Amino acid sequence: MTRNDEFLEKLCRANPIESVIGSYIPIQKKGRNYSCSCPFHSEKTPSFTVFTDTQSFYCFGCGAGGDVITFIKKIENLEFPEAIKLLAQRSGIEMPSYSGNSQNAQRKTRIYEMNRLSANFFYKNLISSNDKAGLQYLIERNISPQTIKKYGLGYAPDSWDTLVNFLHSKGYHDDEISDAWLGGRSKKTGNMFDMFRKRVIFPIIDLQKNVIGFGGRVLDDSKPKYLNTAKTPVFDKGSHLFSLNFAKNSGSKKIILCEGYMDVIALNQAGFENAVATLGTAITPEQARAISRHAEEVVIAYDSDGAGQKASQKAINQFSDVGLRTTVLHMNGAKDPDEFIKNFGRERFRMLLDKTYDANNFMLDKCEQGLDPTKEADKVELLKRLVSVLAGIKSPIERDVYISRTSHKYDISVDVLKNHIDDMINNSIKKEKKKEWRSIKSNVIPVNDNINPDSIKNIQKTRAEENIIYFLMSNPEDYQEIMNKIPPENFVTSFNRKVYETILDKIKNSEKFSLSMLSENFTPEEMGRISGIYANNRDKGIDWQVILDCANVLKDSFSLLEDGEISIDSVQKLFDQKVNK
Image (cartoon, rainbow, N blue to C red; front, side):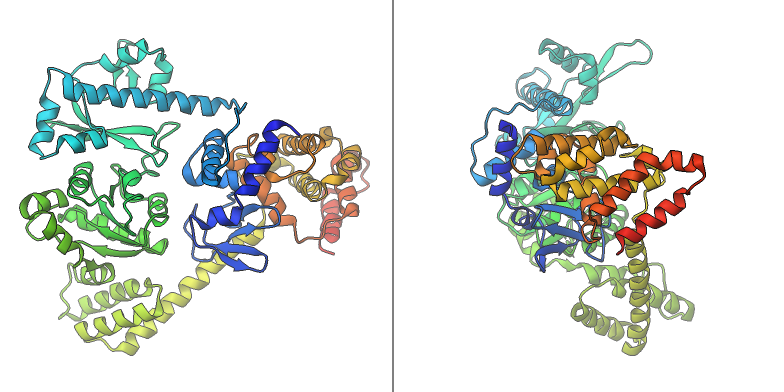
């Protein structure tokens, strides 16, 4: 066993997968395993299973899966070395000098370094340069020196290439600077230019305290008003939230969701560290799930204009899907939190938080918009809208409360409301169950398989390969005999061959095989496929005879067809009979 494998085995023993996953999402004991709703996609029927015997997880809905290291990589958006470092810190294990040299990890490390240097460059430019435009803007917005330092706020100079030249001086190349979205190349001249120019800069920091990107605001009326880092190897604006690094440590189970950087900074400066903002987009499912890992309630503090109200409705639906209680802030006399605090002070804002507007009432009241309930046609349309909102309330007790309120307010029979709501819920449940279970049960290789593209033209052989891989993982002590019967070169698909060869190598050089030994060799998506191979076959009773039949499918399928003795369909039927015994 290599030194790395010994460390990984120790690390995984110290971090039981059910304990680690349970610290992020609520999991429920089901026999010897655990189940829950998947944290990586929205679903109504839980399809995420934690297998305690193999210390692995698999979602039968979206295909995410792997070991505890894979889970941390996906949930925290980390590379392999970063994930094992986090798990080592979590369990108090000392990190050895690690020999992993993933190219992608090195690429991300270089971008983190460039971002950190750039953030420092912007900060020094704000404080020390002769151009005080950025500092003047922040002073006018009542941002204190302490807050400027806390957030590392900065200013991008009114220059085409000052940052690019600075990064060149630190040893970074044009391609790397472009990769980090800190510079770009002019199509006309071919010269590099700074992406951020003459803007106040807001560094975006992840939960591991890495600078992952930037937001920049202009000081005049030019467009775009805000410019955010585009997608890079370390940043995706639909997956991250501004100031979540502070909010998660605020001690509050309530998170205030704002529209912009300045709202969050104003709230934080006023003592409300539990404020976050999206990064130029409407709230996404990924962001809603990220918030749900750190809070039980969300207060939506969007602008009071039409766009803000529309965005609130979308956000309410996203938070409902992940089970978060949601309320809406009504700020009379101000359009946003920043303006409210300026006008009325932080104590009034604190009082306002205690009088938040229930999100369900907000949605129900919005149903009236554009309608006249005194007109029969409008009242029918209103009933449809109300039923749609009420059917979306998951708790039956909560739903009854809002049904009673709605019945009284609009003079609609409770029985009429309940009948329509029950019909909508039942239809929705039937559709969801059919959709999810069709996906779970089908076990069909997708039309476009990016992980194992060879599988499209080799469906039967792919299934045979997967059963061999499952059997090898379940019976590592028989690896020599399995390898003698089925050498890797018999595998038809390159991905499955790599999996097979890697498992054989790990078993050969280790005292005990575990899924975690594969984490460094495969991406989280590939680990999901490997976990799926195991999860989908563990109850099929695959034995040696089935494996011999699978070996024959790989070895002899072409010659059998040429001789006209047996068709692929016949082989598949024989294989299915063996598996389903």
